[in-house]
Length: 245
Image (tube, rainbow, N blue to C red):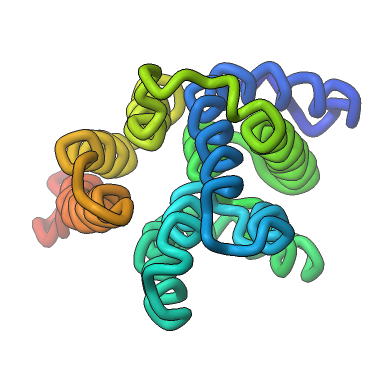
């Protein structure tokens, strides 16, 4: 995916990261706008909803939290966000070996930027390591962070101009499907996002945005089972036979 090497300059890395990130981010644009609209409609104080964007920094969990505010207890909100974001455990486990030789500050800060799109891009660039990996990761993370906040703001300030007939409630499923098309190349990741998109679309009419929670949980479960099968296939079989001469 990348044409970077240890000799690549910071400018080259940032440019490459932005070019790679743009098509992966496009399916998330309607979702970001929906989150902005939901902040306006939420029972949560508007300033709290706005702060939830950088604090939660996970679209699915943020969307569910602000949608359920006023109709669920704080414990339910926390548990909902935790369940939806549990797929990030799988992401972290998959890329943790590549963080092992990184500076301590990066190992602490890097996970904050680990959203679905960042994982998809890092996972399909296994050739990157060391300084290049770190700069590429931070560059795509910054791209998604800025772009997400920009389009959430669009939803906040221009959401009333969006017709109800556009059915933006389907935006989460669109984003997950877009990840499958543009970003995820590792089979367990593809399984996870496809199942999440399909189940989210099928359960779209459930009350209190429960379809998003059901879709995310189904995606995590499907991704976990796919990961187990994937590991069984890639692990070399034990060869106990004696070499012939």
